[in-house]
Length: 295
Image (cartoon, rainbow, N blue to C red):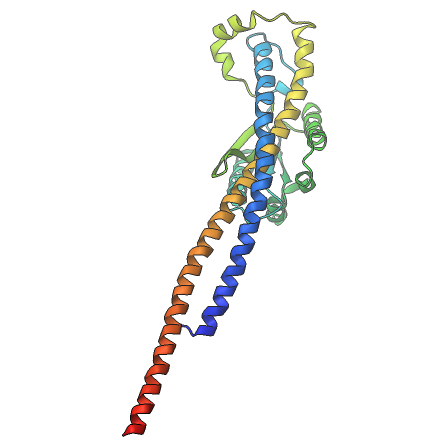
């Protein structure tokens, strides 16, 4: 059994760690509430924009440069993680999925094709930068102040590269927010705009959109709506990842605090046992000495 000094040192150390993890949990809880409110407010907006585009584009043969399907010669993979750790498997899951997609494209793309990777989050940037043969760009600063203007500007640059035929396919790997306890690891096609399920339900869609009167023309509306929807979708992806990150960190810190509490109970029990054993030994020595003097 460890001596009293060693147990006291461990109790002090675990108690200090418990205070830190408890404080980090409260900080993450405050950030999580703000991030949760942001993403829950953003989702209906992006969903409504997507619904309007689907209503216009279903069965009409109307498309934009963002719908163009081309052979894959230039692929961009966007990886969204976090700038900080201590959030469980949040970052490792995304990085593992991103590596699988990188390996997939390396093996499936033609020899003259190029794979580009964009990292948003220091955790993915620090690992991916070690791959010397990877065409990597980083935008970690976006997560420090995730404003719509900054994220929309990055989305615009990606969209411009796509319409200029510098990119043929854009894919995003990120954690989609579900609740504070779980996240959904998602791989989402950003460009070109994928055909929607509405195309398979043309009759129902046509009866629904017959209630619309378009002014100006459908083509003009779609030309304005698609870039707006893409910017909003990219912003929603970042907000999703942020909310999932804070939820994961809050859960991880709660578990760490609970584990520290359990460990403290065991250490205090060990301390009391060691203290009791030391007192018993001292009593035995005193009694033995007293008996020796009597004899």
